[in-house]
Image: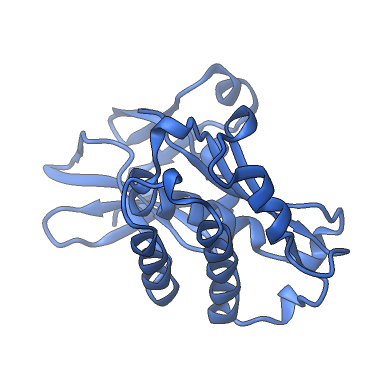
Amino acid sequence: MRNIWFTIYSSTKDDVKFIGLNNYRTLLELLFIPAIQDKINREKKVQKIMLDFFPDLERDKVEYFRELFYEKKPYDGIVNISISTKDLNWNSLSDKERKNFLIEKWKVLFNNLSDDYFVVDKSQVIDTLEKLKNQEWKITSSPFKKKVKYNKENYSVVMDITTERSQLALVRDSDKKWFPLKDYETWKIETDANFKGFQLEEDTLTLVYKNFFNTMFESPAIFDLKEIIK
């Protein structure tokens, strides 16, 4: 089943006013998939749910949002609400304040969707958002089931994703020791760290990209394990 895309769009062209927002957006997209998407009614044909940030709006356009979506199917599978950022100084906010702001705006969206958009009581979605607000925003997972077997040891390839950065690493099974391979900007991982598998030849570990575009335009993800694992 295709994942619902939960995302955030900012109309401002001045990205320096929202430093780090793209990282929060990308991590939230990943957190929402297991937390919320199964609570959405698939019969509504929803493909994308998004917050639209507008610095010139006086207030969130809740009434207009309800006119568009309340007990109606979304046009072209998109559910979006216009959010005012007029009085928001994103760059001055702490990490906790940023989390609170984003979750509160997602609550505005879900609170104003009609019950037919959900397969559970809407309060469960709001409760889930509250829990996300108070937990650590971090995902550590492996893109591959297969282990890297090197010098008689097994290693898992993992991606550790936070709002600060995403780190690709090897984790040794025997002692859980962490061997960093490469850091990425979190908002770029879906393109720059788009791997489908790996190849190991003697000391050289090569991660294989999923598509031809990455192979043509990205630097090869090649690592000398003799230098990394010491």
